[in-house]
Image 1 (cartoon, rainbow, N blue to C red):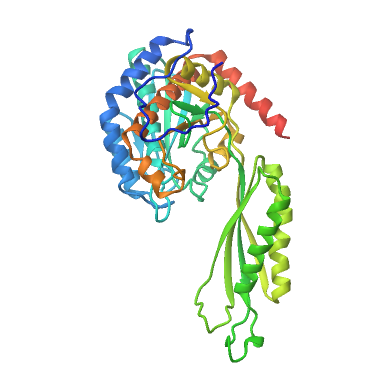
Image 2 (image 1 turned 120 degrees about the horizontal axis):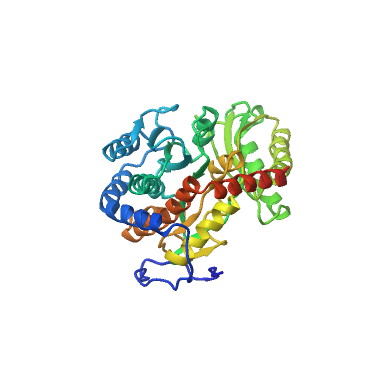
Length: 425
């Protein structure tokens, strides 16, 4: 098996038109892949326009109204049955059914951007990938007379809003036999990654104190800013004793602060990440006392509110093996080191609840220009990133069509899902 072990990331000056050496061998249903390739290639121009349109109109979590309208209009024009404002204001669903019965493929398109830096996580690419996969599956079902259904779900608020979790709770995934999506990241040229990603626990911390004149009578105050600074320092010191695979990071803010006023309020937002949800819970037990100790030391009151827990991403092994097979024989190389392995996604929760696959795919980036930087925003708009997105979309559509056409394969997918679930218990 060919796997990437390169130390060099794909840079904008690299010539990605030079194709990698592929492995020889047969793939499942080459007639389906031929339709998939043709369908996505024929849509490339339209998808590029959609890609740039979304990129040029970044919207924050649960505010993706422009993206909602752009995607739904596009899919209506391409023959999908579309439901706007599906279960959440900015969510949507597009479905296509061929014949009667058949298996159901689920696909996700993300939409939201980041404050101040736009599509610095490449959700414009994730969004059009979902569209490409769904359109390719539709073309294959039509041209080869395959019974089945594809459900493309437009999912808002991946960046901290747990949009997929809310949609799951409202039944948006209940028909799907498996669900697919992808995510851009730095990586070696032509590589598609089957790495996982971290579980995450989100916290909001509020300190309450008492104002006073900072020069005239500071002893009358209880400084909520000092509490936040002390908590921040406590956690910074604790990092030496936590595992290198764990991440603890956050910010602090306040309202109505002034240099001559002892601050009576402060607020902190913290994320705790680890390779598994169980490990994140263990680290949480060490983090919370850092906040409590700061309150004790400053005489303030503290309130720690826990938000949603994001589970680690579990790549379904059978789906992953099928993706690996078609990528290595037709498109590029597979790696297990890059992707978004040290980040988190609400698709992790989905992957704990049903069979799912969420590969990363490399796009060209500049040094120190990875996800959540302005430089990555620029990278996500490039033609090379668009082309890489369509490659992984072809591979995902191939996997999705095997879900629809091969009952034995789908049963293996479901069996492995249950095995992986039992191993977590």
